[in-house]
Length: 96
Image (cartoon, rainbow, N blue to C red):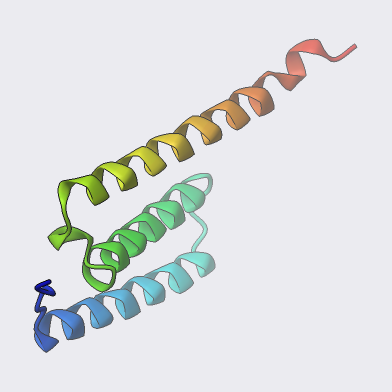
């Protein structure tokens, strides 16, 4: 089975990008942008997770079945989060 060959340059660029995104997350913790803080932090975390999956886990060079399984896992995660948030946001409706 042929393994994907990824250059050292790609790994180095990804590593530096992850370091810069981690620095951005840390600096964001010291900034007060109100409710946008959480949105920006989660956005940076999603970008970091995507970089890790694409480069270090070789998702970009895998078969379509692997990509389909990952897409299914992401959809399931979104479903669970949306159900949890719908419960959280509607709790105040039934207080007595």
